[in-house]
Image 1 (cartoon, rainbow, N blue to C red):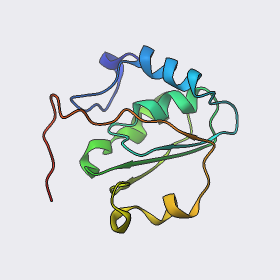
Image 2 (cartoon, helix red, strand yellow; image 1 turned 120 degrees about the vertical axis):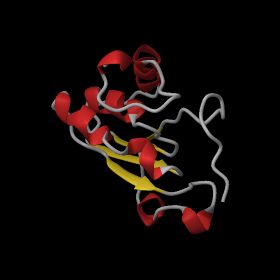
Image 3 (cartoon, rainbow, N blue to C red; image 1 turned 45 degrees about the vertical axis):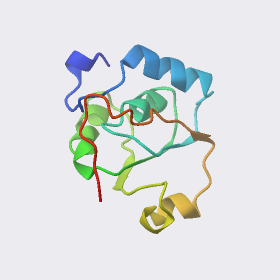
Image 4 (tube, one colour; image 1 turned 90 degrees about the vertical axis):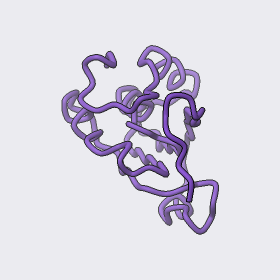
Amino acid sequence: FALKNRLHLTQTAMEPELAFIMASLARISHGSKVLDPCCGSAGLLLCAAARGASHLVGVDRNGTAFVGAHDDFAKHGLPSPTLVEGDVLQSHRTPALCQQEAFDVIICDPPYNIGAPVLVD
């Protein structure tokens, strides 16, 4: 999962060691339903899948952030997440699937606006 070996990354992708620690601290295990509301290139979801999560959903305001992320999951033989463009902080832009589903774990590396462009509506 080393960043240099990932097929798809964003400028602010989290180091995989930290992502695995976060997934472990969140107690993600076999069968967990996991939501990442600021998924970027889906690195946290990749670690969640490696820990056995069975249902993965990622949301990001910037839909181009996760284009190609499914390739990283396929490379490791992991289940692909559902990735959708939206904004979980604005109810009218929150994907319906986030409002209709219950999740065991919500894990997130929030945007810091360091090294990445700020998106303004």
